[in-house]
Image (tube, rainbow, N blue to C red):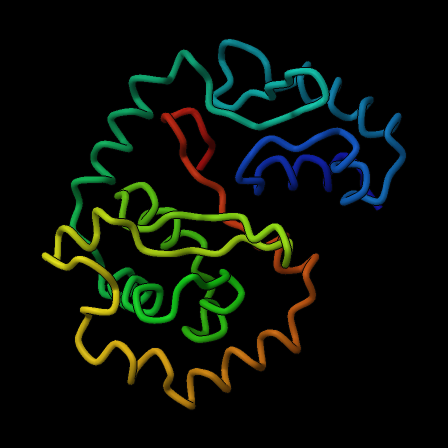
Length: 202
């Protein structure tokens, strides 16, 4: 098992800074080994010619875009925010609107595909927000007030056929299957990276 490969992958996929202790637990490696890997990664990434860097504050570590590329990243994010929604994005947004708060694992199961990239685009556009469910130890996604204002609605209950579609029996069966098949650790591993303040990775 490659500690470096696992640590690097976790930093890339994480939606927020991870503690060294948590990295060690997720990578199934000693803290000392993770610290050594982090030193190697910082030596490799933290150079002016690199677009990705390893940022560490105390025991918290995060993979971020280079400050030298901030203008380029900001321009990209602005373009992402202004672009039109694709059909898959609209489908995903509809599911979140009618069934949210919902986990990524549930979304993936309903749509039959990995929704990580679409979720990220929807969050960049300010249409979807992520919220930690501390009791279930998972991240759930829900639509924002900006989305409702765009539609001229005051709440999700005003969506067409809201109660009927939210309580659809087939949908409930699909979600029940997810709860049986997706362990908590796997659900957390599937959480979506964000692009906060133009300094997050792709």
